[in-house]
Image 1: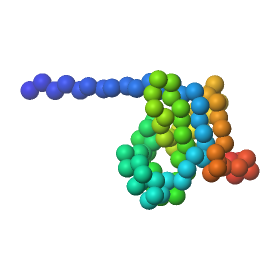
Image 2 (image 1 turned 90 degrees about the vertical axis):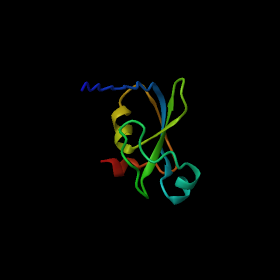
Image 3 (image 1 turned 60 degrees about the horizontal axis):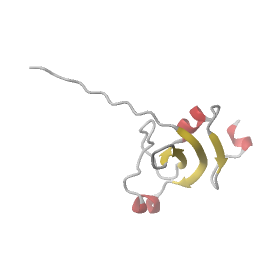
Length: 92
């Protein structure tokens, strides 16, 4: 028997991130049932998690977690604070 493993890699060209876009809850799941996890690291969102909106070149916007936002923070991606963004004192 021959087994083939196919690996697919996606390269996301992020150019803008809005931190604190929305709070993940039941109402959000009703509107967007297809958006249940971070598009970059595939972490499942839990009720009460703050989700972030990332704009991707030549692609639709994606939802990412705080951990992934921290990874792109010191790059050339434009960062914007949303309604639910952490305050400076909370980050330290």
